[in-house]
Length: 76
Image 1 (cartoon, rainbow, N blue to C red):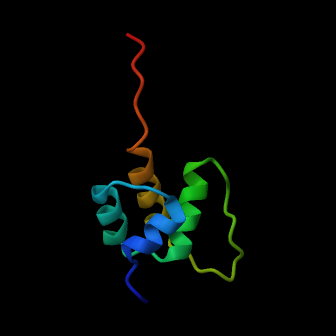
Image 2: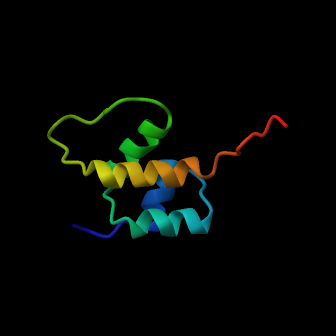
Image 3: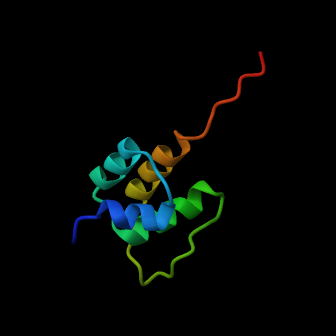
């Protein structure tokens, strides 16, 4: 398995801050897993066929990283 590059992450996700990119690369994810995590974070179900092996724990971790960028609104 090849190491995910910053260019691949930004090509898939668009602009991300350096810390998020490093965290995503640190998961050891494949480009397919980053694509899937982006879709999961947007509320879609599995989009890649069964021929693409995915590690759900890695995809879920990337979703957590992506969602951490979302602002948390407080209604107080």
